[in-house]
Length: 185
Image 1 (cartoon, rainbow, N blue to C red):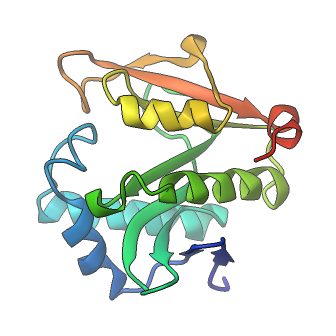
Image 2: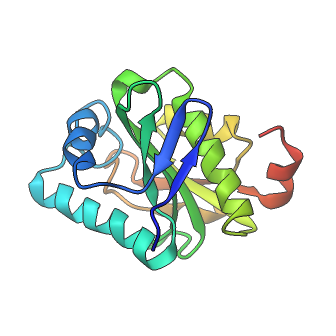
């Protein structure tokens, strides 16, 4: 499979390279970034996550791609698409996801990368609907989902204590092709 590369105004979403991983984990495997993502990962969890991310691209042609800032080639995190695969969740639906280093927060990078991912989901991968998952207390994440035009899908919420044991429910937002195409993106 050819390496994937998609550019936005300030970012490059691309296939992973082996030397990306140390920089990715250095920036994102922190208490602040991982607060709603199951906590800081040990080496075993990091390697399992890398294997999953790489398998999505190999098996489906899309993944949570490496996000690189154009101006300095800094690895900001990941953003992209995968098939939802969490037990109890909307299995098989196209899922958008993102994780950026704390120094990249509040600059519009997540929105820019997520918009590009949604464009790719609807245009290149020809899906009719894309979901995004988070926990209720992760207001930053569901706030972005709302800014992207996604709507809450309580009918798809599911129990899962892996990310927030105080409120063990994964909440789901989604957007359909017609809504996305009707938006300014």
